[in-house]
Every structure is written in C-alpha cells, then in structure tokens.
Length: 287
Image (cartoon, rainbow, N blue to C red; front, top):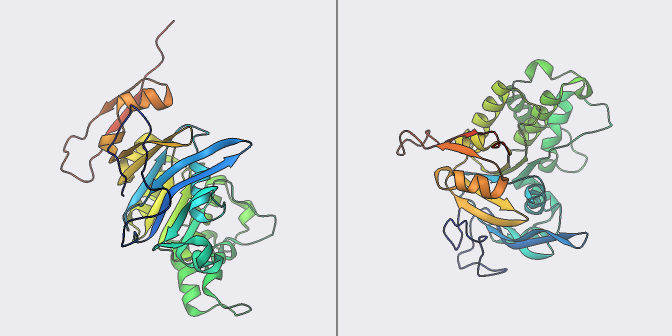
C-alpha cells in the first residue's frame, strides 16, 4: 500500500497530490484524496490509498470515523465530493457499473431483501455481472455458485429460504454471493458481525487466502492484527495512521484513537509472517 508519509500519531496522515498519480497509474483499486460530505460535515476527508494487489488492508477506527463511507466511495456507491477512485488507473464512472461489478464485489454490513429467495439464489446473484441480458445460467455460473457455497460452509443450506437463516448464516450467504462474483477486489464492511468465534476465524482465514485485493472494515483490533497485511486507522474522517499491524496497533494509538487503556503484546517472532501483536484491554482506573 502506498502513502506519502510514514506512520505518525502527532497529526493525521496527509497526501500531496489531490487527484493524480505518478506514471504508471497504480494497478488495481486506488483512491486519491477522496472526500465525502453529509449534513454539512466532512465524513471522509482527503484519504489516499492504493493497497498492493493480493493483500488485505484493514480499516480501523471508532464508530463514526468514516470506515463504511470510505468503503462505499471505493465501491462507487457514493460519488466523492473531491478526489477520484480508480481501477487500474481508470476512474470508476468511466468504467460503468457492469464492468466495475465484474471486478469488484461488496459485502455490506446490513444487506437484506424482502424477496423470497433460497440461499442458492442469493449466491447466484453474484453471477449477474458476468451474464448477458436475458441470458440463462451457464455451467461456469453453476460451478461458481457451488464453490462459493462450499467455501462458506452453506452447501447444506442451499435450498433453504434466506429469511430462515440466522444473522451469521445470512452474512456468510452474502460473502458466498461475493465469492461467486469472482472479483479481483473485495470490499467488506464488518463481515464478522453476528458470527461466533469459530466462524469469525474461518471466514477471515478464507478471505486472507483469496487471491484478491481485500479492503475490510473491522472493529476487533486482534482480528485485524491477525489477518491484515496493513492497517489504515481513521479518526474523524481522516487517515490517522497506517502501516503493518506491528507498526499501528500500539498502546499509544489505542489510547489516542479509542480513548481506552490497553496492553499490547508484540509478536514473539517478528520474522514470522503469521505472528502478530495481541491486545488486552484494561478497565478504566477508578476516579
């Protein structure tokens, strides 16, 4: 992931160029100085990012820090008030919605439907960008749906109504739909909500192993440290710190951004890519 400044906690991360990159344009998904305003307030304020292809970038920050809005800007659901989001150097509006959907899959935090659909039908929605209008499903579509159901442990629920699923199972079904889409970039907003510990770990192991570029908003600092290659911390809509989990997940940053006390244990073996810092939160001191 590329930024202009090193990790800092004295002031927010800033970038120099508002809308352009040096040649060649960054491969994959990138954003340059994107901003979004709502109700007269900047929700996202000048954020630049370009995750390295095939890596997982975690978005951390308190509620209201701009994580979900940033994901919606990256997905093209919201148009930035300033700056630009690109895929392989091409702004999303020039690509069009269908071409963007072939490349980029999104799992929202509160996705729902009023239509009566089976789990298989929900997952099959991920194949729509790859089909011609009014055309039927192909063997490739069927294989992609079966594989996605299997990867998310939903094969035995395939013919069940989506509305009868638990909250965690519904979330897994939407992730299966995103996998069936066969994206090169995957955006996820709190995908571990409603999941028990086993399914949280299984799901993030699956996501981390995918050969795609992933941007994932999380609340759990330990999960972010375990599964993200890099972390971007947001505070009040601005990029506050970025870097590897060991660089970013520190006691000082947790106090400054979240306003809580914590103990952070560094990796036992800094050279082991699977080792990571771990966070233990502390109770507030008595007044």
